[in-house]
Length: 303
Image (cartoon, rainbow, N blue to C red; front, top):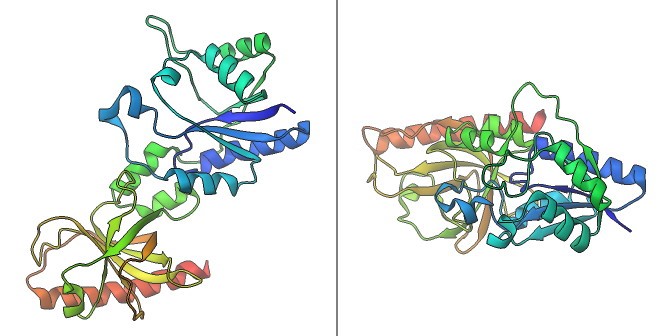
C-alpha cells in the first residue's frame, strides 16, 4: 500500500514539526494508508556548506525516538550525500519518493522547499511539486501553518539557547531542551565548596550547548524519575577561568556517578556566569542557586 509521506530534517522535533506530523497522521488515517516521515542522516549543509552547519538540537537517536513517539508509522533516514544533494525536486520525487519509498501522497509543510535549484532558475515551490506529482502519480497536498504568536523554527530555538533563554526554547520545542553527557573525573572543587558536582563530557559534540551560566535542570539516568539539580556551564572565573566545564550538582544526592551517562533537561536560567571576589562569596551564591532551583522545580512540577 502506498505511503502518505512528509519530508524534513526535523531537527528538534519542535511544535511546528509536531503540527505538521499531526496533519500527516490524521490525513493518513482518513485515506486508510500508512504514514511516513522522510528525513536525513546529517544536516544538508554538511555536504554543500560544511562551514555553516548549525549545532544540532537532537541527535539521530533522539530524533528517531521523538518522531516515533508521535504515532507515525515509519521513519526513513536517507543518507544525505552529494548525489542526493544534486537531485532536482522532480528527480527526488520520482526516484526516491515514488520508486524507492512508494509514496502515493506527499504532504508539504508550510513554506518548505526541497530539491537542488539549477543555476539561473528560481527555487521551486508548491505548485511545481503539484505538477510533478500529477505526472508521477503522487497526490501533493499542503499542510496548514501552526497558528502561533511567535515564529517557531529550529533556528529560533538555537538562538534562544545561545542567549541562555532555555524557557523560551522549551516553549518553542513543546518540552524542555535536553543535553546528554558522560560523567568524567574533575578537580573535585565543588566538593570543597560543599556542592559536589558531576563533571560532564558531551556524548554528541555536535549538539548545541546553551550559553554559559547557572541553570535549574532535572537529571535523568540515575533514578526512575528525573532528579532536581543545578548546573553550571562556564570557565569557573573565580577558580581558574580556563576551559569551559559542565558541572551538575544533584540536590540531596549522594553516590558515585563516574562513568554514568546523564541527560539534563533545562528548566530555567538562574543567572549568567559571574566572577566572585573569592570562593566564600562563590559558596554563598551556590547556596542561593540551590534554594532558587528547589523553588523553580517545585513550581514547575505543580503547573
